Length: 622
Image (tube, rainbow, N blue to C red):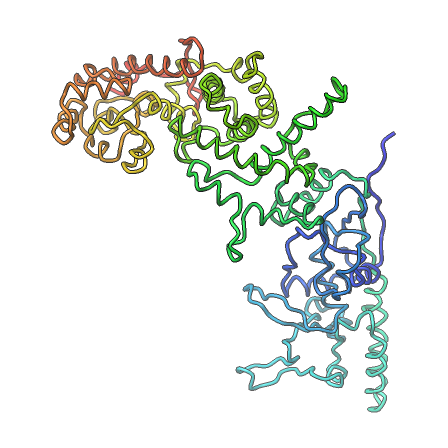
């Protein structure tokens, strides 16, 4: 039998506002603040005054497993914050706060105009206009500055002055903040006009009360209330669905709210507090340029892998098996279920795991965040190294980690369904290191020669992988002969550039799809690339000798480190160069993956076309 997780009913507006004033209804602390402006407020008042629908509210009963830190509705008395709320308002904050600010408080409303400039406003309903069926109701809702005077010519002419109750009576302007406590104002109004012998005005107010003020008094809002037993993942999903106008909350922000209830500031732990001189984990991680784009959710995913792995181990020790064992997981749901105690227990280890991951990436000649083939792969890598600690540096262990890493890249297996792969690889690579079978990522990975023809985009993980592998295998600067280490990389601004220059290829009638492929690219320093310029290889090789600290023989050696046949380059033989280097790159990739070369064909990744062989491209172009 399916049990409903929510109730739906209608509740009087005045009761909702009263509960907000008493703190019985509050907001989850992670919600953005009240942001509605003057125009929105006046439109809402106009709709309520005509008993028009303004949408449903959604609340969460407190007392369940999800325990968000609450905060009172903006403008509520200080005492409201001392009360344990009965419900949290998930959807409807802007409407309820606007109505609370305008109808329940004796203070001026601090809001914004259409230019987003902060303004203070008192809100009134023009009694005569509100009773005129031909007048747009919004025209009857007016806002006055804090001094309650509407002026022109820079304040010299007073158009409307409502600075006293008597002036409100005289101008037939009803203050919105007296809607739920209008009796004193009503008695004052009637006395004012009785003394002047004008019963018509007194009758006018009675009509206004019956048709406008009473609309507020009897107005009901549909309220959907989620039960306290609703799982936190469902609550968070619901919250995001209903708050489509706001910024989508990720797992980090939601977990921040959950931990705040236990007085733990997750945001400060991650981002730090510069004003207080507190350095956060993000700052420490970003000291490694290769980790510059690590997100808070990446950190939480790695931490969740460790937490759920240990939960599973504890369950195994208790004799549980099969489906009774909790899964190792880093899904959104598992992150939101992450106990604060586990976060505190594993955070330091996970931070160290990311730092070790940065060290590993540097050993693979990956120095910048933009050069990381799959940023997602850093998550299981960091989690794995968190568990291994210093053991990862043993050559037999590092060799397996390297192979798994390159299989993930060249098998292009980290582009989708990654959360499941995170968990599987975290468990299986560790098992493999301890003598178990190969992980699924290693078994599944496959690379065909034709894929080299289609790698043209810097966004491609495999493209970035080729760049790193060439440097890792000893590629040297062609001008100086220096090995490309981290010093050369940063000082000389190394990037991947064309071997046969683009201009020369265009003039030679070579198809861009061929000359832009990674086969025709290699890591070069900026100075070397400038020397190469736009001329034929046979020309720029001479220039490199003339301007470098090398001779032709040494230059040939440098070229071989890039898997380039010097003879073919000196002869400007693009076709043979392309075939030769493609074969060499295939062997390089397959060696990194621990696989045998597959000479299969490829399909163009961008257009789904058959890949052109170099000679076909030249013939077609000419």
